[in-house]
Image: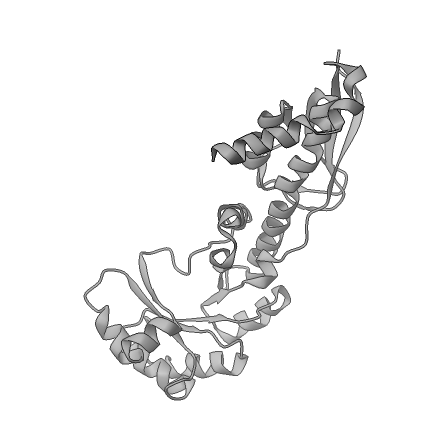
Length: 276
């Protein structure tokens, strides 16, 4: 940590921008941070921390989670020329990706229209340094990142394999508190048969993690006589698929790539004047 801190300051001390802006001294500038496209604002806490780290002051035009139209001002930024130059890359880095994810999450919720629960658990596959940003951005968009709101126990394919199959895996966690969520992939039998085994074993949610719509339909039919069991579906679900999958009667959709790989919500920072 000490070495990293020292290297960070050594690089900063050698930053050529110190020389470029040397003649400007401590003159303070005003810049506007605006968006070039519509979406949902996210990442403000991280941006605020970066602003403070480089000596910038921010005045937000509105709260995190608000809708943005093209050309909307996100924040007014104030600081020295060097701080503004540093802040441009740091602030955009905090806001653009997070806002893009939040925008896609909001769109997914709108498309679901309350007919199916849409969640995104793909934050778990992100690098450690990005997990919190992704999870927070999903939440800002109004989309849960947990498959159910209640406490739950998730038995994925590897748990099932190691515990000896669907029936054995559910028996192993029978005494544990929480909704039992189990993946079915058609490895032991057909999806329909595995779904019935899961329902009989006490599964509260059967996750069809194959990406094949016909498998979700098979699971729904197999679980028809088990009304307390919910059917979840995952695997290459696109935002435009949500209404059609809701029509099938699926209870939960876990959407990964379409959320976490959402394009940046483009923003720009423009110096507009000198303060004072």
